Length: 134
Image (cartoon, rainbow, N blue to C red; front, side, top):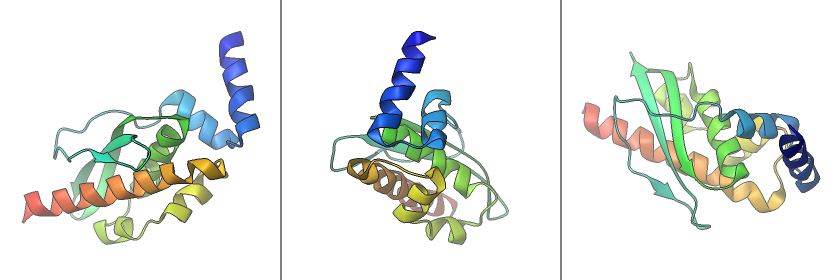
């Protein structure tokens, strides 16, 4: 418990919001959905992410992700997968890096690229889904 408290304190000092810390610690939506396997997307920093979507009648019913990266990548992956649930493919396509940062409450400025990573991985997953379904 003391180790976890120390990590939380460190993340708060770095500028992560409570929501971002919670997503990171609980690994919200980390996993795989077997429907369509997207390619992994690697960001400029070297972190990588895959987003898996379960789509029914053009609506995203579930979303999971896997990542290799920092707390910012995991928080952003959790945020974007929460944001897309219940949205159409077209609505999900419109999610931006700023939307992810706003959904988290705050993210350290040097970690904004993690939100970009999540959005780019989402777009790649949507593209792959459309290719497989057409």
